[in-house]
Length: 112
Image 1: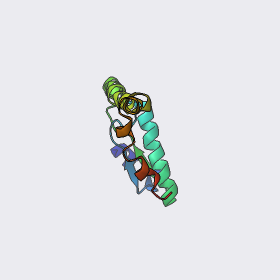
Image 2: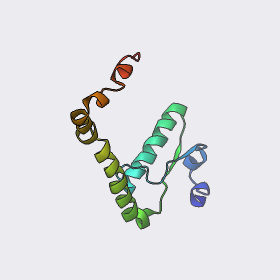
Image 3: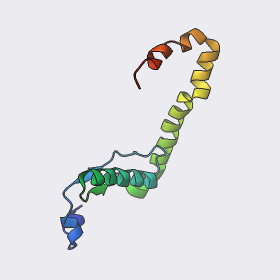
Image 4: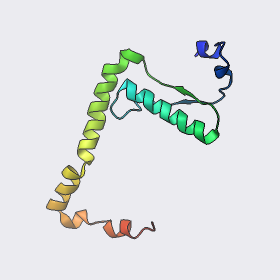
């Protein structure tokens, strides 16, 4: 950060907004995807503010690639597996169809 702030390039002087995403912000736990997520957030804010925005990518770099990858795979993979329609919702609809219908009318009655 110090090197960025002390940079001789004018582009660094034009930035007065910085964004930082959470560690492990990628659903796959990939450092490359986390960097893309950080860049996407900064880009969206830059477009909204119509000014340059600095994107800070959190993490320890290569040191956390394995941990991040395993965490993303097991945490989000398990979540995706359990929340998939084919497992929980289909199983509930098959074994307890009356329970599966609870709330359907409520959701269908909301405007738009």
